[in-house]
Amino acid sequence: MDENRTELDQLGEFGLIDKLTSDFRTKLPSTLKGIGDDAAVIEISETEAMLVSTDMLVEGVHFNLMYMPLLHLGYKSVVVNISDIIAMNATPEQITVSIAVSSKFPVEALEELYSGIKKACEFYNVDLIGGDTTSSYAGLTISITAIGRAKKEDIVYRSGAKEFDLLVVTGDLGAAYIGLQVLEREKEVFQANPEIQPDLEGHDYVIERQLKPEARKDVLGFLKELDVKPTSMIDISDGLASEILHLCKASKVGCHIYDEKIPIDAKTSMTALDFNLDPGTCALNGGEDYELLFTVDQKDFEKVQANPNMSIIGHITNENDGNYFIDKNGSAIELKAQGWNHF
Ligand code: ADP
Ligand code: MG
Image 1 (spheres, rainbow, N blue to C red):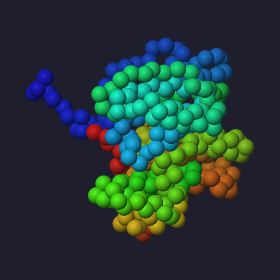
Image 2: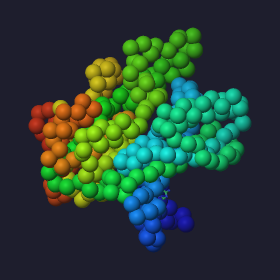
Image 3: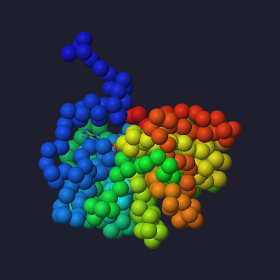
């Protein structure tokens, strides 16, 4: 065992998933898609499929209760899960919630968590249908499974992008990461001197993006109205660069994206500069925005360009051309994922 020891950080999250799962082949005809997309796809009838996705949130790794109110944590845990169902162009319908909880939490705290879960269930019209409850030695872990439904023909996978397709993102990027920087800074100030009240003024937008993200269910409606079916799609949980690379790898294509086309809110840019951070880098590598990244055929250019919720940030190229970020001076820089690596 000892002479063969591989440290987890040598592989990283995605390397580890690959290593553990590469020997598994799906064998049932009802398993339309197993590992490798935002959600698994299971056939339920000739025309319909069920989608399943699961995510775990661990105290100290994914959230810090010093600045994350439990109400928000409950809401956000549901959002991050159903975002993966939405990223398949499907409708989330049910969730299960499992918690491992240490004795440091009173019942009232967990009730607060569940009121956040309830708010999200109401807003996104999903039912809580089960879960599991257990004790833990340290802190709180929340694991949620989201179940959705779609017509088979409507499902959008990561793997459908074709050369010359346009790359599109929704909303704006980088704000959740900047919100986290503000909260971390104020936490440190507070820890150094509890007399000083946190100074969050003027940072409402970025803090809200961190503490209360929304899944872009509305975008599925816009796409339907425009009669546009993306050729591929993924949700942006780990940072734009990392998600583009996932999408390009799954689709066996390359891409060019343009720095000046990446949507960043002015409030995000201003605060990033206060922190001596490059706003573009925050958008590329920040994470937790829960926006959608998708590709569309060139014929849909005008429809997408006219929609204020969508920004065309680049296009798909041949796989052999690689993945490039074109900066404001026109220099091409190879895209590298620097998303979260919890190990
Ligand atoms: P996302 O960021 O969209 O939630 P992940 O990066 O967590 O997706 O997961 C990528 C794929 O690997 C998904 O299909 C997921 O179900 C699968 N996966 C992740 N961890 C495991 C695991 N421990 N065992 C089996 N499959 C896993
Ligand atoms: Mg995802």
